[in-house]
Length: 589
Image (cartoon, rainbow, N blue to C red; front, side, top):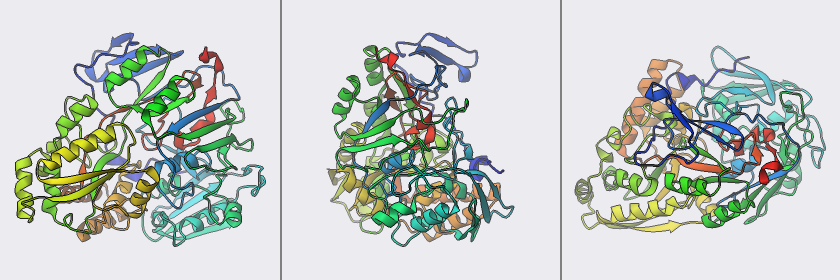
């Protein structure tokens, strides 16, 4: 069985973010500090019966939680909320994070990432799921999956507890590659899918694709979905029924959310042979207002809070009045960027894009919004590999240093000496998004560009990003939201996966380099190609990266054997790890 980490891991430098803040008070529950080498210095704390270790690189709280030492308990539900509605619950129609939240604990994949507690979330290991094992041919053109026998769909209409077979792999592939599927390009390198028997599925590729296992194991195109639901309903927009630990036959209610039930037919068992999942279900609720989510969490109406806090001060203040609350410090692997519509004026002129970048004071934004002493431009997954070796805007090149006078000169050279008017679309994922957008507006106004801010409803915002339906500029997440640098390149390649190349960038030279990178198995050649792509992308300012900062997730102590983000690219909300969570009501007292 070949279950090695992605090919590009040899050159992909993965590290936790170094964001130790000066002048920031320690967590109130800090108990010890030790270690002779500063790189190994840690703080330890004991909260809600768990012994936690905080590495020096973190500001206050750990990223990694240990396995719970308690006895698992069956029953109970958890409730959490996000800011907006999923545009659709059909995996083929959107790459929305909210759709991924609803699909991943329900739809299994052939392979998945190791989500055990205690693991480094930036260290990816692919492990069996619906495929018990798999083999990759020496030439990289054949992926053969040996399917798990005895897996059953839930015993509800229309699947009625039937067995999972290779026919389901075939149907899922056909469904995701149909002409109107948003994610069909994920399988663009597949020549054929063969299913010689009930328990074997073989993908034959047209050319090498060292990121293919990421496609099969990812939350965008890797799901195995039921043909009976599509035959009955026409698509997957109404219900969420899979072989995973939970399912929802009632479906999604816009502006309300969705309830999931325990799948008693689920095939996973814990280390002692006990049937999973432990919980009876979980509930997703839509709460656009940040203050309302905080209030609901305080009163126990929500069990979990995602990205609740953006500054150490907020975390420390909340912890003082909630002594058993658990926090996870987490930095998104993706880079927040301003994307331009490159296919239209004025954004088709590199001088204009460069001017917009030069107008931004990254350090000032980091200090004002995140209590960081200076801007950190590097997402932890691609430190030193995409954005550069040093942790500052200057590393990116001359267009990323705050210089409003140079910005004005470039605008004048481009024919905009009197500036111009435009708009900037964003969604309020966190309260910091509004403040960030207002600061950007003020920076651009200072160089003569009048920007109308458009805070949008999530379904409209996501539809615009999925289908490139936005007007001028948009706030989005770019390279990477995946665990392999190969997939990073979907963001820069014309014709990349789904909606990822949102600005319509079609640079023939970059396209040629990306294709060469994907086809190569030579580490040195691939490293050279990625650096060429990086240099040109940054020089042309096809997007403007913004500073990177930690967020803090939070949950109540009765939620056991849990951490919200088990994997830097896809959190526990997105995967089978929910099957291992249990509720201990004794912590409610």
